[in-house]
Image (cartoon, rainbow, N blue to C red; front, side, top):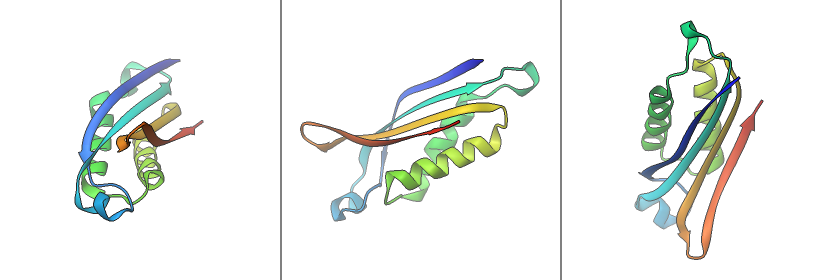
Length: 108
């Protein structure tokens, strides 16, 4: 079993339910861990995974982190059938002064 790690992918996007979150972009940080069975004819392209994440987050202006994670996960799993496990985490590092908030999900 192999793992692909995408760590600390930063994007400035519109996400959230509060009025100021709907008007101003905010920084989010995405982390991904993919466990998969490697075969030369069916490798996982990490650049494609990053493009899926960036495209969905920049285009969709989600209200909830949960909705973003679910759509990203579904897209990745639909594209790469050899994934055994997928972990996604999205955090908002700047929304509160003394910490970060975020959501994560694990698909097995």
